[in-house]
Image (cartoon, rainbow, N blue to C red):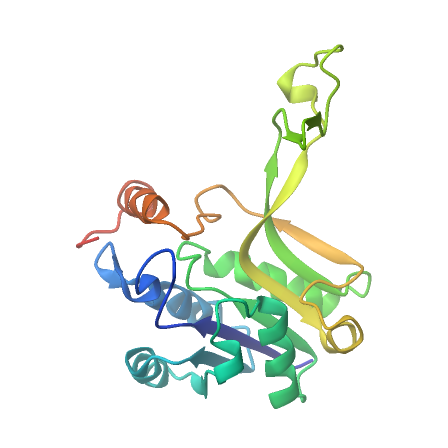
Length: 223
């Protein structure tokens, strides 16, 4: 079974200017996921999709093939589904397609390996994603989601919810072709800890990631 990894890395970001190019504990943000994808050593094809000359140069030096970002996919309204379908159409020869993100700098090689191994070997799932388990008191639209306020449960007895980390998605080719979505109808959720689940979308996220990098992963350097 042949499996490919695609990492989209844009040069610009609306909420955090040049987010992917910012320093985090001595490295550019985009470097972390590239390093971890290489260290996982499970992909038959490694690709970086970018509109940044700096990122493209780094990716080639790391052994990735570079896909120039298509103009219609460089817009802020383009999404991960659009990108993965585009990548499948460019490279239809793979059995499984994985999408990893620079905004998940602490997703570890072990988690990547586990997800690839599960999708390649388990015929019961057609896709996978990384997630964290949340067990709190949740509301949506003025209505409690997972408990009844009149019957107050202990927090440990609450029905848990899973939250996508948005760091990793994988899907079999047949499911991607059928649903044109990075999650199929029989997904496997691979649970990771809250540190691997760090997802950087704001300046506050970037500051928190710096703390996690220095404190949990013992990283040094600026940022």
